[in-house]
Image 1 (cartoon, rainbow, N blue to C red):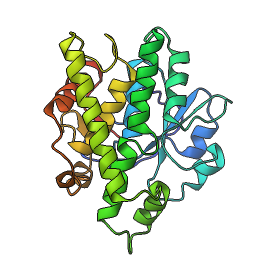
Image 2: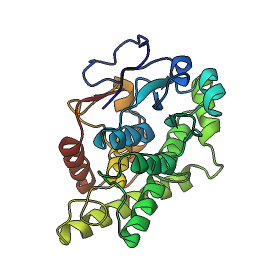
Image 3: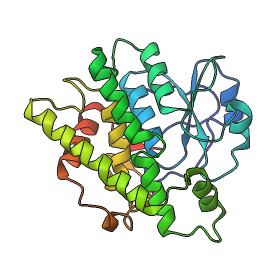
Image 4: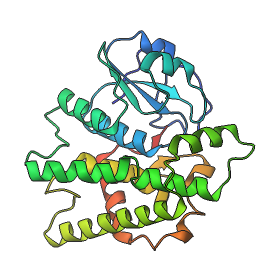
Length: 270
């Protein structure tokens, strides 16, 4: 559910306007009440995909405002103290720019549709899996480090900005090891869950981990076009990375496709 408060600003559509976010400028969003969320305009960034899936599944109204990858995003910096997306601001509360902060905020706003397991062991497992997906040295971070390792950012200021942001100094081989390890972890987890009759990553219920994995899986294989609209370049963003990885088990994509088709309004467009 997306609120349409404020004056929308026009951007060229990616391919289709269906289920697209109705953006208002950062300056306009900063002056509005309620929940405002900055998303990377035009691309389904995995952190943003997970946050949007959570908010829409919980039917939490929000105003979308744009962040432009690789750009200064000066207005966003002035408002939230940082330049990344997603970042969520509720009324006069502090900005929440971390994946775990957004999960906790959404759970507080709509506890009747929980995405954090009640059992403590399952809660710990869910946050642990999300950490392996979302955090520094996790799946998304490491895939980006591999991309930057294969593509020198010379002559591309935006690529240089992103390379500096994600460069943790570990190098290509470390990133490749981490990606393979997290993919193997997820595949083992899904196989074990299926063996006990569960269709979810944690316990027997949908959780935030299922939604965040759906977003990050886009790097390993682009979501179908009838599920998520994106620029052509973004769909093949990791194509030159994949030959350096072990084959990704199909169980991951089967799980991803089942989750997005069952629980999200599609196609999604950013």
